[in-house]
Length: 369
Image 1: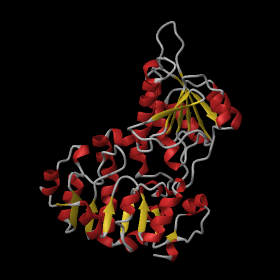
Image 2 (image 1 turned 90 degrees about the vertical axis):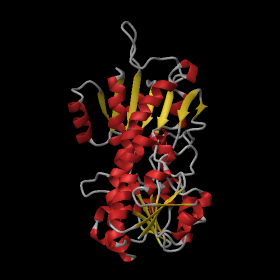
Image 3 (image 1 turned 180 degrees about the horizontal axis):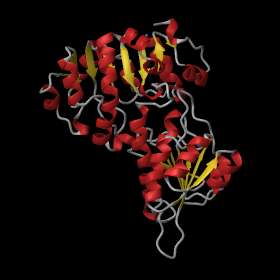
Image 4 (image 1 turned 30 degrees about the vertical axis):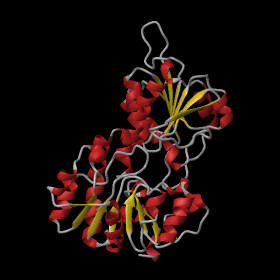
């Protein structure tokens, strides 16, 4: 199979779809790899590193037009959708629940689009989403600490405090992969942390591994409101497969937060769980609503591309090999986890969560494969 790895064009996105190590394995298995010139530079991988393991470096147009399978990191940008052709396979993060126009154009293009974020194991885990959620969760706390500084527009608070001074308060909405990684950083810095979730087993697990040194709260509207209003830093960490994130914090609540507080909503790529959040970029990451600092960068792991690219390729590499070896139809039939990753199939929306969020008809994937 001919596999194309284009250079990412989303603003300040420095990751690349595959590392040279994964490319080596694919080339060794007899597949043809076409990598766009400079695709790996942002992650520290020069063109020569790909050439040495068997790939061919090509211009952008050739990568998009000649490849059977396109492996990316982020959703195709508006001009990139125009390069797609009918029957081509796109393998990347998509987050279509919050991107109806992109979903429409992918349907019109007649492609098969498999989204990293909806690939789901039988145990309910998301193997390809997980590594970037780990990175984003840790960055969320790290970024929040910085934004609380007065010179960054925050209230001028040191999250962990010092002897004789109150610690800062962090509220984390969601105790999944993003939430636990944000918790690790905030807890290590000495903050007082509330974690809210609707899964009591998850809350028990978090309480146990942190030896009770946090507040675990069932995510009722009343508990959410109380925690948010006393927060210095609010981190949105909610994810439901393929679906738009539920709005847990409305604008009225944001307006009652203390001036200079910070909101980092990692769920922004699924629409966000804070009503006042909207996507931003690494080039212009923050804005203020009701004098509360909002950070809505939808590709947070792109800020640490070397770590993120390697972590992502560790999970996508075997799946790319599976698709290339078996062909997409047989790969989908043989892997229920990968089948859940299918979002669009030649004009049909085949993921129920995506279809529900967009208000469009759903076609089960087993009817089209």
